[in-house]
Image (cartoon, rainbow, N blue to C red; front, side):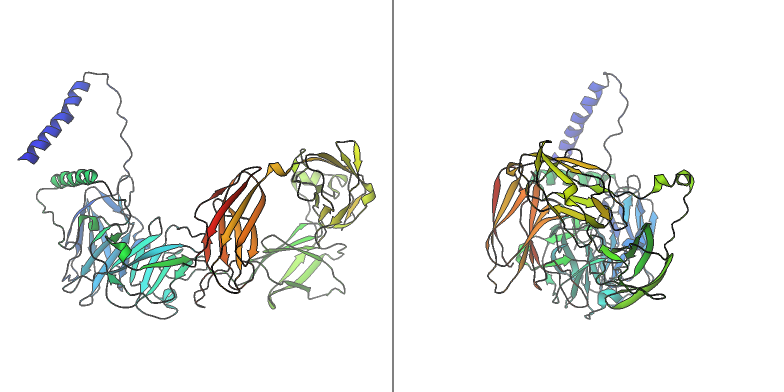
Length: 613
């Protein structure tokens, strides 16, 4: 009676303001906030977690109209069936029909993923699972853990965690899993209703939606040992934060109101072995999760080692680009029809080593027939025409004088009177490899009028960068004048008059981060200490270290950085990814728990004690 009186009073207070406001100005309705809530499961027949299931149709009722989205990409049945169930929508419900003969005394998990969505906004029920048993009980064991990127230690999206009861190396390549779930946005996962046994545990970013590790672009994680599920007891929601007691009461009242709104001719029933939270389709976690083992999985993408030749193209006169599928290791290029009796090209690799440029001075031929090898194996042969294509359109109207080659020399920090770092040697960069330069025709002035002696040298083997041999004075302005004919490139082209004006900054223009790091006690170990941007997408600087101490990163701008320590187990000076069939885990990393803010003219020191855990 008290509950009824409470509801009547509540409605009176809600209605009175409506009568009061009806005398005010009429305004157009706003339509209200956008619905972001997924459908709520009201009941199912048979109930979720039923026993003695004989394969009859399953009907699940919702609080709103629903539709099926990407069912083939989401639906997974464990243990696997020969034929996937047929799923149809009927109003505010779905009907699932199973055609296969089911195994005796077996718990079946129908994992719908995010395929059930509301009709209006497309909000999906996350990780909805329908679980039944053909025997007298539902399997009740579970495992839990986390899965993160092996290099960044951050969770990734769309990560499936999978278990296999067949134990052999190729199982994730050849078989679909017997148990599966999807990690939440924090990288946490829980797989429930597992039968007793030992299992192989994997995580996978499935690029082609077949639940197999069969795509070189897919990321995988695996555990070195078998896992044994345990009974974890009652469960709570893993995806939602715990609410205050008052909020829980409000939620209970909302469920009561929804229940009252259901067609009175249909009985609402929940399984005795499942809570309303279970039927909501969220992944569950045990109440005392910290008392049970948690497994850690580290996602990696295997290094692609299948080399292929992609293309050959003339980028400019005497410049041939050879493009490869993956970074090249030791390319050999040979003219197989009419071999040269001398070195006929200068090689230059791109920064990521997947493009090899052949600079060919004095090339008199109009065609090359090339055999291309990498890592000691011939991978392709190609015929390349060296003839320039006839110009078309506007280019066809240009005169010969307008299209004669020009030597382009730049100084990136000097363009537009830019600022040059005082601690770096000033450099000039050429668009083509150079043959020679005459330093006597270089004139350097301090403050536009005071002559300063300067010398340059080739910085790189291909001779595209000229570097000043000495540092200049901080807080000073300079102008470099290069007279005509001072520089000659490999094609014999010379420069016109060049002039570069620039300023140098000083020590106060930078900050320093000093990492006071304590390493684990391990003999003959090597590490890579890396300074990265705050999103951990680019390595700014790195140091090879093998003992505890203070390591400083200098000349930093005012910005936010991350610190990472790589356990360089093979001492090759770089992080190495894993390889599943070789049972090779990616090299371990540790990430400093907080981003570090550098300040100009300031040294920021951090203390970092690295453990093996």
